[in-house]
Amino acid sequence: MGLEEYKGVYVFAQQVDNVINSIAFELIGKGKDLAEALGTQVTAVLLGSNVKNLADELAEYGADKVIVVDDPELKEYRTEPYAHALSSVIEKYKPEIMLVGATAIGRDLGPRVSARIHTGLTADCTQLEIGDFPINPVPGKETKHNQLLMTRPAFGGNTIATIACPDFRPQMATVRPGVMQKRERQEGVKANVEEFNPGFTPDNKYVEILEIVKAVTDTVDIMDAKILVSGGRGVGSPENFKLLEDLAEAIGGTVSCSRAVVDAGWKPKDLQVGQTGKTVRPHVYFAIGISGAIQHIAGMEESDIIVAINKDETAPIFSVADYGVVGDLNKILPVLTEQIKAARAAN
Image 1 (tube, rainbow, N blue to C red):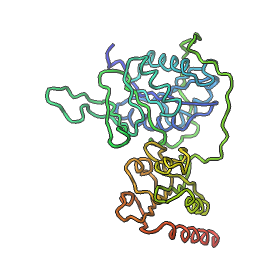
Image 2 (spheres, helix red, strand yellow):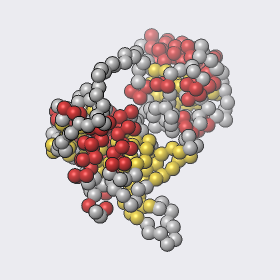
Image 3 (tube, rainbow, N blue to C red):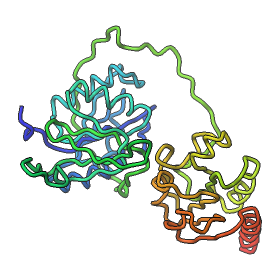
Image 4 (cartoon, one colour):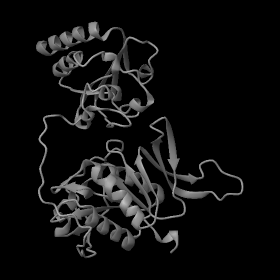
């Protein structure tokens, strides 16, 4: 089969309990950019049970078409039926590009599907674009145009690799949540829906779910926060995070942290910002006692306003900061917190 038979940008629209994960909208947004460069359309693939009513929401965020695989076997996520469903969609519709969110579900599903359809998969991408491959022409080697160039951190985030899949289709990638921008929602758009069901024959690979226990947590998802007060190793101790918590409370923000803080056991992994944590885009990001390693900056550099407080005036964090304060956070934060409280009280 020729590669030219594969057309379109397809996105796995992850849903759990009939609620679409925001990564689906982010992938549709990026998919639209890729589709425009290729002169094609974006199709969302929605798998589940009684989920057809969710199709319009995908269209409102830009999906040109929605393929719905609706079956009781897909009510909860299980590897085998979901992998069978998505592989069958790819085999029937032949997308040129297939994007999956690098969520817990996507990290399980993506590699299994790529193996079944005999194509490559670039995992945990932070950037996608259409271009030529090889990027730098090699004498005697053909340059292929309109390839999906997939960029991801490598070697623990110490370098960035750009990968292509020029000889197989679809070109598959899992994409880190929070990295791509979703488009503005267009209320009232109706989806162009096509229903498809490959048929399901349960076998010994079908896991039986005996019970679902949902964890209850009062931790705010830092990816949704508008203001983040983030601390690094320079905060000095877990007790000193009280200063950050006081500032966050005064300004209506949420506390987050760097990897060094998580590694030291001061804060849980859920609060980590960076390449090995979460990618965030708050309106305001306070980087307090954070030196600014490239791995951390990659997770927060898209913040609207970055305020850095560090006693080391040569810290790399100042290179991306909109506002920088050089000094002792133990002296600066209490004063800043009191000034914010006074300003809010005056208003």
